[in-house]
Length: 140
Image 1 (tube, rainbow, N blue to C red):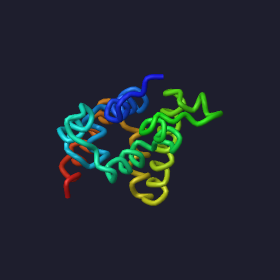
Image 2: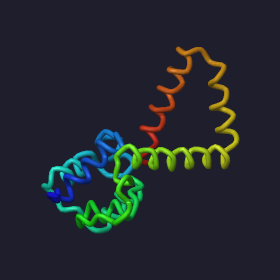
Image 3: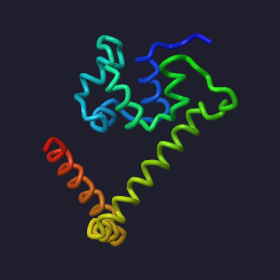
Image 4: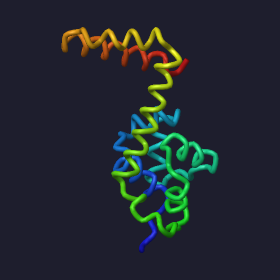
């Protein structure tokens, strides 16, 4: 097996496994999109601390991170390298985080629940406004 370079593997994991745009990933990693681009195209070395951030934010299983970093395949894990399975684990973890937020913030849960009674047009407008608010506040 030809071992890909670390930056190529991380880019592949973001785009093929997680199906995140570079912009979405940069927001989650709390870095500029240009910094992520530099990491992914190999023009900037990825510091060890940032690798830990990638592992945490991308929710990369340890055996998969070992494969990405060192080309080590863990015996008996075969199918766990399947992008679909890795994506499902990532999405399951995200859903758990969302449910926790809804449990911790009941007023937010009630607000979101009210969306069920909105028309589609009103839902889209609400979501657009929430996204706009999020982008304004993310740098606070």
